[in-house]
Image 1 (cartoon, one colour):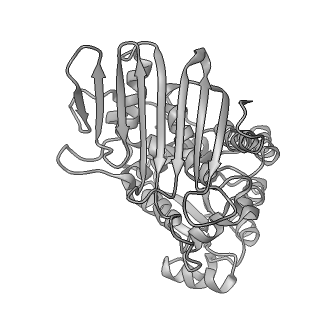
Image 2: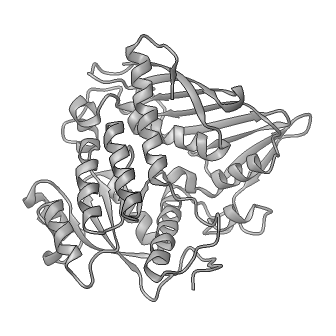
Image 3: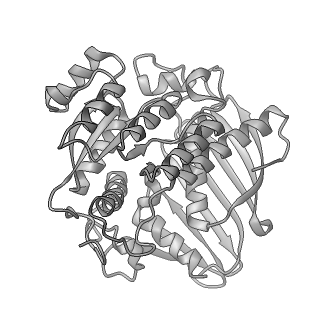
Length: 392
């Protein structure tokens, strides 16, 4: 049934998979997850523990049209309740602050429920390693939500690098720029307030939040491992205990240099995740604020703009992620849908015992989640030591 499966918009089994949520009811992240799951046509959202406040959880459950019997007051109650049902959830999306990820993911894995976890995986390397070990030793499913790699043109960029279109890679630049941290945090915006509390975010705020996206995209497109880094943290917006800006120099395998720059305090910058890769035979540039175009600059040749669309010469991996013909814009919601489609295929294969074609899916592994945690902590180590080079 799954071997050779092509569509990302038809349920792989004879039903949609059942999805539950922990957290996310009042924040943007939860709505992105939900929009992607629904747009993928692979999932029904059937259960949730939408808040740590039981009354808010009930109110939010009603707003999401959840069955009151499957609107839970705590994640522990939800894990036990859903595991006991014949029609229990096939996966749980965990959309909560960083410091809660470990306990929630551990609990659901103990009940045999697949995990779809927001990044960063955890705040500490020790907790990340424990989740990886729990997932691998128990053959549990655990993935992280790095949706930007599920844009069709990000997939095309990776293919072109792997295909040798740029020749040997010589340097990489990736940045993620926002402006919401210029002003003091609004306590009524829950998703922003906790990101300024060290006890919630760990040793880093901006790097753990958006820097992990930038780092994953760099590794995803180039395939290069980072060997060493040095980082400087700054507060460029309203005063706060954690950084809102970071400059990170990278030394990647083969001696390839890189620069990773993130800020949440640059006025006029909204969600500027951009990557540029240069090799001996040309360069690539992709901007998630204009996600449908990939700029290819072959050395000594005219610049080429490659546009998302079907039947336009895209690689198979990219074309499979295309929803609409050219001229009908696609955006981040479509990338989230692609992410949830690939997760659904992986879980459906596990349920049915059917194989998935090699290299058909690109969903993040538990080890990739732990790599992100190591990156965050290495940046913090470097900054706290005065900006020294540290081994990753």
